Length: 223
Image (cartoon, rainbow, N blue to C red; front, side):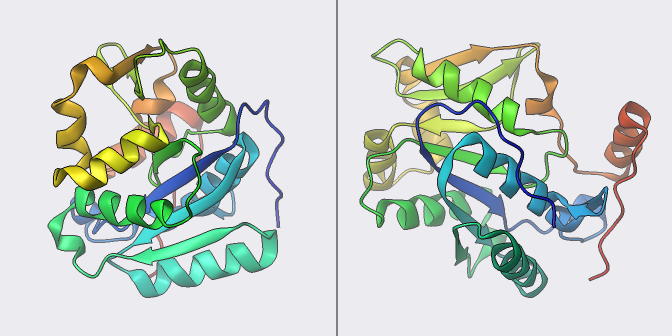
């Protein structure tokens, strides 16, 4: 089992990793279980978050929860990762329903750490990328409490929230996305050339694009 690589960490944070999707545009597969260099994307993301300083990682599952949760159990048992599994009973309601479930689970920890919301299907993300966002978050203007990266005018992931904003989202009755859209003055846009933040896997052409860029293959999971 590969251990997480050490990265230059900032302050500790809570991580929310979304792994509930249907992968419909990829033919209906759990994208987080795509394999790269003998690791699933789920494992790579968890190790990157740990190396960046995540104190706890809440993973939201949904579609394919049996296989995804089996992989999470294996990762926790072999790496010592502090993982909390939250299952979305209605993943067909979309990603934002998973975000709210994950944020509620984090709120129950009663910690005041910032929250980083990450996607499990971004194969280029590394600990250094998360640290770049965390450093930008540390240096944001004091009146800004939400951060996301912007690459060539395209919004990327992850999203960072202060603990207080997370509470406001949960109390607002809005989705996290709608809350952010309705509070533009709270947003710090992290302008960067790191395109890892906007590279994810949705379709078969994205698999080809990944291979053309890296020379590596993302293999489809056997369900």
